[in-house]
Image 1 (tube, rainbow, N blue to C red):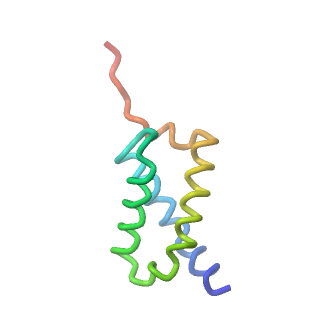
Image 2: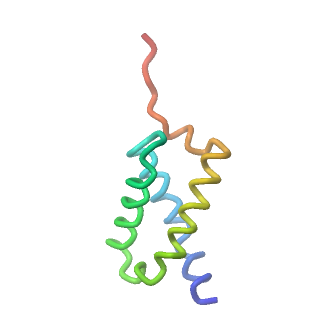
Length: 83
């Protein structure tokens, strides 16, 4: 139960980190690098994250999978000016 409460407290911030990383590295094909960046940001800013990392990784996977299926990351794609 303690882990659930900690994760629920972190979830809004975790989702914002995921969205920020997606905007910084848009598109597909860089999933491993994006996951590393998310994990590095979290462990750098939250000292207790190491104990939660297996859970955090699963949540990141769920969030990214859902965002990809629903098109939530479409807004993060760079806009290419028309010629």
